[in-house]
Length: 135
Image (cartoon, rainbow, N blue to C red):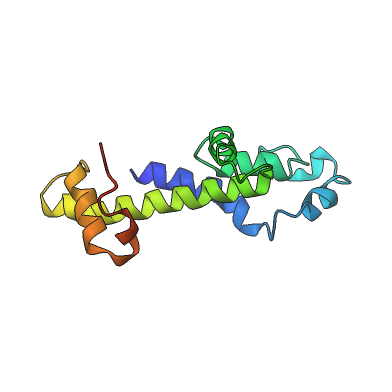
């Protein structure tokens, strides 16, 4: 478990030093030869899309397809798809952590539906989910 956390921390570290995803960094990297990259194992000039793909755990193409399923959405920029994917990841992580507390109270390591139900009932932020789990 610690190795997985370390791997996540290592993969997230380059993103923390990047100020934004506006493309300014990509333009700045265009003039830097690959040899001067510092040997970090990543090729120079990887800007925008490649960095977003590495940072997202959910498939961006699936998120985009779900977004376009809404009749009110005609176009979805790559940045908006990435933000929705990241927000979804954070939401799932938050509700899973809260449900884990209830699983641990029951001396279990596996989340069950009742743990999610307990988290939804106990935490006001999840009130909109009450009665929505149908699995």
